[in-house]
Amino acid sequence: MYWIAFGDIHESTGVLASIPGLAMADGVIITGDLTNRGSREAAARVLDAVAAVNPRILAQPGNMDTDAVHQVLRERGMDIHLQARELAPGLGLLGIGLSTPTPFGTPGEVPETTLAGWLDELAPLAGRYDKCIAVVHEPPAESAVDRLGNGQHVGSPSVRRFIERVQPDVFISGHIHESVGEDRIGSTPVFNPGMLAGGGFVRIDFENGELSAELMSV
Image 1 (tube, rainbow, N blue to C red):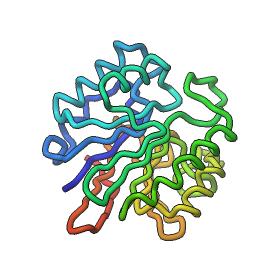
Image 2: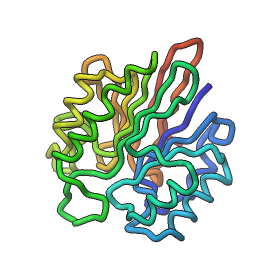
Image 3: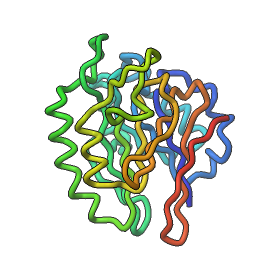
Image 4: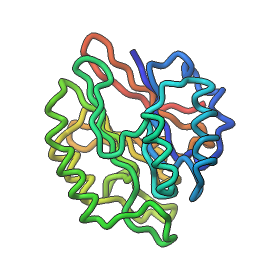
């Protein structure tokens, strides 16, 4: 079994047909930022484009997504924000979307204290599963995946503490487009595939109870 994860779509879906194995994947996981402050119609266009390749979609809003976008995810039964989902027997997915405040006043921003509370709520749910994937739009602080172009770290301390405490088997973030890459916090591999338009994605494989993930690009 395998899943393909990506995010920061920002309404640009042209690369979808080039992602190897996307159509046959057991599911598609979208980490956030489907739109650019988008409407219901913008969200529908993005989701329809993904569904045309693979209709098995799980997604959450990012900081560039409005409440209207989030509502479309709920209505379609795709929403993973603040949820735990069983992907397969023994394999769980935890999701947290949105981000902490940015200089741009984007629609999906919450205080660090709110994000910390959400992480505390979800942390115990990881124990339900033998293996756990955590998908949080905001990257962990002081890591290889939260740097701006000038090298400044802008990720969340609460997300980093969550990873250190829970040690999910795979952690996928996004949000900081220029910080494509991977890192390791404790035993947890951490990935940021960057903007979808750049061709980045994460392939997650689950076979015989073993979970692995790889950062890839078209």
